[in-house]
Image (cartoon, rainbow, N blue to C red; front, top):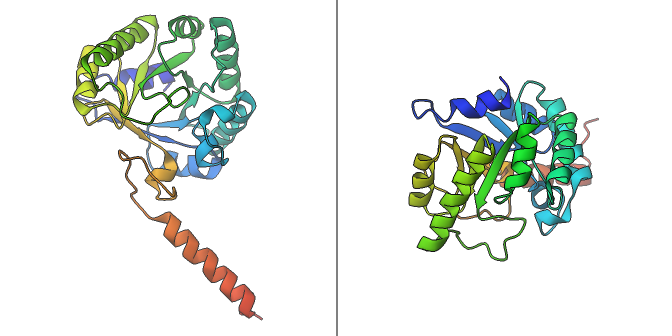
Length: 252
């Protein structure tokens, strides 16, 4: 199923909500796909979650291409959505060239932050599925406070979402906004919304893999860990160190 069809089927409220998780390498991509996750997002959050950078803006296209290719190798049959890194969608021509590069690397669709309507039109008209991203925008945010808290900003978000749909987006990620805003935007659109801290009214949900697995030292308030791999990994590594230092590993 191509990305256009994959997103389109989740616009139907009778279909179970879409599941999406970030992936940055082959082993976890294989596991996420085997687990049945609908869409794997190669997020520019790789900058923070994996590479030790302070902001997502600290990486560019070479890093994204590298990780998209790794995820595709790990999950050859998965539907893969790739973030357009900061500066890679500065204008329509640049955005289209970089979208094509991400698709060549293995992505099925690309995601742009903010109401970049000309860029969305150029990519969509070229036959590449493109997803929007509204609410808290990590690439440009100066604060991590919840977005769309007043009526003016809520109205603006809704206008932007409708404009992205009209421009050709197949879906819109809504990040860190009040639940009632996520639900109202979802009702207003024909395309599916994917929430991350946007409440249960969205047509799908996305989280950072390292938050889901309990690897992150700190999680945002809207995330949940389904397992504590941070603790179990520390225990395993300490045991390995202890046995190596004491000479009990490897066995004679």
